[in-house]
Length: 286
Image 1 (cartoon, one colour):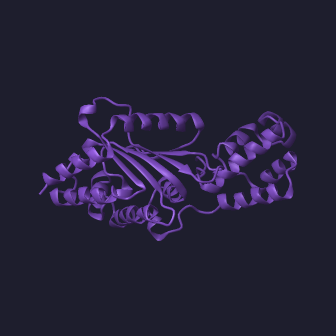
Image 2 (cartoon, rainbow, N blue to C red):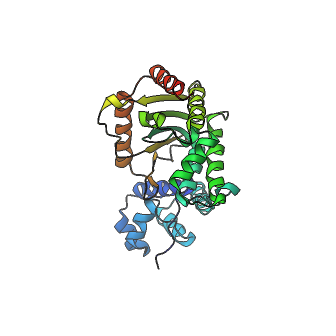
């Protein structure tokens, strides 16, 4: 039976980046570290990729080899403790997937989010009625407890947009997301009115990618790029799909999504024209 997958956390990402930096500062390759510590080289690759959480004795052996000072040693050990903390700590997270729960935690710590959505209004901007309609459609025959947890998660996430240092949110929506009537005309009209309200926030930029833009690089699916205040937290991409959601790391992969987002926002309507399109669409649902 396959082992339990390590859940990505902020602490694990920071520890991975720190250990990679320490090894490089010591002038050692992963193969040299493996030869001198007996730690499997594949394990070292997984640890530095934040795909595996090191045991305390493994971390201690690495810190000894890298000859780090007491302050950096304590910091690394503290990060290991953080990495061991469970990601799901709020009651309404109990029925969420591990990846989605981890994403919510990352989103709460992020400085900014760049979101592209092909079909639905993003969770941060959804009304409860719209959220329930989406969940009911995308998760048929879902248990009431799961639907309640998913809906509550989306509503609670929105606090990041109004906290003292709010998340800077830039959304590019395919026109289909505002045209498709989800949950009936009343629910959809309420959702579009919510979009108009949220677009007035200084930390929210909303653009619509119109149908007449033609083919575009976002047709493969929806995604969100997260940027963080802490330089030890590299950018992260959350990708949604029918087969499941995924958190993507790695400079090259993240950069690719960044390039795609820049292309999409360049093809989209201006924020002002986007508001006009949303208003006219809402008017047809009265």
